[in-house]
Amino acid sequence: MEPVEFRDGKVVILDQTKLPLEIKYIQCEDLECIAEAIKMLRVRGAPALGVTAAFALALTALQHVNKPLGDFFKELERAREYIAKTRPTAVNLFWAMDRVLRKAQDSDKPWEDVVKEALRIYEENRAGEEKMAAYGAELIKEGDVILTHCNAGALATAGYGTALGVIREAWRRGKKIRVFADETRPLLQGARLTAFEMVQEGIPVTVIPDNAAAFAMARHGITKVIVGADRIAANGDVANKIGTYGVAILAREHDIPFYVAAPTSTIDPEIETGMDIPIEYRDGKEVAFIAGKRFVPDGAETLNPAFDVTPNEYVAGIITEKGVLRPPYTESIKKALTGK
Ligand code: MRU
Image 1 (tube, rainbow, N blue to C red):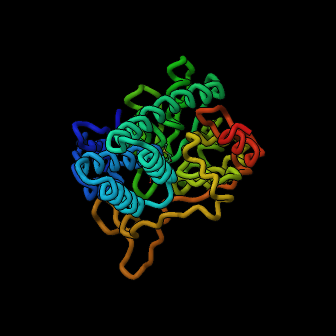
Image 2 (tube, helix red, strand yellow; image 1 turned 120 degrees about the vertical axis):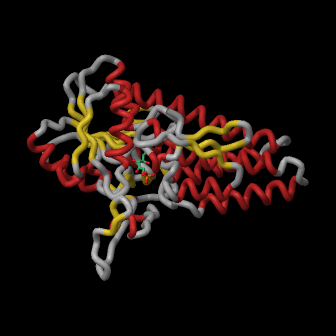
């Protein structure tokens, strides 16, 4: 399932807020539509955000193809700034736009190259996800019961998935595994999206409330945890959906390996530790309201951080398209990014 495509000069987005009840696509013809879709989580997940942001620049390039070069670049920069304001945590969003801009700046036909580079980012992401899935599948044993948090599947990426890509690949290789999906309050990416993808693939999946993770580890035979990531610091600290940090601590307590699956484009070498990763805080209404009805009394405050940071010491391995990185992460990450 493709969460986002660039088709006929439009950015076509599968509206994930409607899933699993309705499959609805929106066709974005301007930046406002794309920014709104990102902010509302119609399109979401770090790699999918990177691809969407790259497509936003491709759309801008096509709309300003006849402008003088200076004005054309001003429009691209304006689009970058506008999309950069949507969500701060997933580094892929910034990484993808900067890559497209660099390509345009080095090109003698920037109009064409912006579109080509955006499409290349999409294709590279997709190919990388398949490689990552193959490395990750080696870690999965027959009979594994895998807990995951949020949705790191086809919907969150260029169409294969990171954490769920690994699970999908292991299943396709014939390994009999089961998945436990944390429901992932407040926006239920686990209950709505991960369960949807697993059911579509025929992989046995059990949805649990977030607060049942410890119980599931103690009593329901969880053997591995695999999650995605929104940004990984140079030392291997991992920002991912709120609740991930708690799951990592629980996994440690139960002696269960905790893996992160993410493309190397999710690693931010500029950020030394997780403390410096910008964390998005969302509207408290997402906590106070369930299905349009307020449950938290007026007068109570809410706090709605969208992500947390898991310190690197909890991470058994980072599954990437370049192989499985192991501690010490400062070294393995540097090697994966620079070859040295
Ligand atoms: O707020 P979301 O739904 O965009 O958060 C998504 C996650 O936290 C995912 O786990 C992460 O982006 C990895 S997606 C392959």
